Length: 450
Image 1 (cartoon, rainbow, N blue to C red):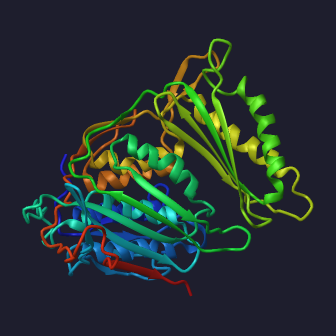
Image 2 (image 1 turned 90 degrees about the vertical axis):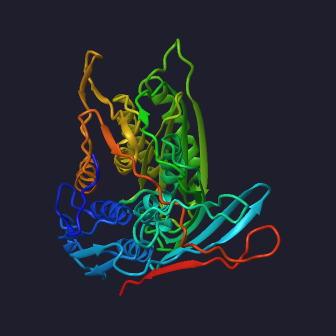
């Protein structure tokens, strides 16, 4: 089905289903790509504290407005209603500069999105990635795909983004940098998204709040994203433990991991028994540099390359001299959460399932994502695992803006969105010699909280 063709804003009540920030992020991403105006009311209306735009929503909105040339009504911290109309004004050009190596040439476009508080970097990244990955910054000002090669006798120029986002890398109620790097990005690569390189400096909401940053580097899609099928999970082959905690607790955590591994390896992991090889286990520890910062991520990798993750940014009181049980408590909770993920035999974890929905809607053809089935006591397959409220919300937004539908088994016939990465209006800067010119054009977005 084709996306709706409308000049009137599509009304999206912000209290629908999950009623949080994800609804707004997905709506802005698709609106910017499709150049479809939207009117979002009661923004984050199901959240405590009154809802409205927070700083990380605001910087995403500001970036996508500048990049898509959107007219915006209602922009501002705390705003509960926004009208977003792409193409109403001149958009930012993203000129960039060209790097030549051998027969290939790349234009590097550099973007900085700055937050003055440790709002989630990962949530901002999720909001802007579809627009950048599908070439939204390279669509001509009239909204049509230019389809032009920069023909100067030297061939086509590939697009590459270097995106720097400041804020928090480990923030409450948000995907961590670690989950993004170890689960989200590998799974996106599996469905056909170009590889994304990442590096970070930590920023925390726990303990002493601090600003960090994440730098992403990636190319854009050159053609339509083909339909993808994540239906065969395979068997468990590796489990990674990533621990961020005060340096003095490293021995305690490593000892507790050994105990937990022994306890779970024969009773909790599927496909492990006398006839099966035990999965590999790997532990990494990083000093969080604060007595109140504890974070644990467990990632399960399967024989077919699937990655499922569960984590916990410790949000309970930490009292000096009474931290002995934290490692055991965290491992127990996160491993039980992981056991629940593995028991249903789906190819994605609960959080990844909703992150793939936008890409299912934009892909060409029917994409399938196996969310798993409940396991009966007698070992037989039970009912399908129902999508989370976040996933249902993402499906609803995709249905409203892309006119797609999702079946009970996680399938969706996408619209086959054609990337607009060839931009006839983008002018490359003149430079001499090989290599990248350092003075790249930037879009510097800032949002400050009062």
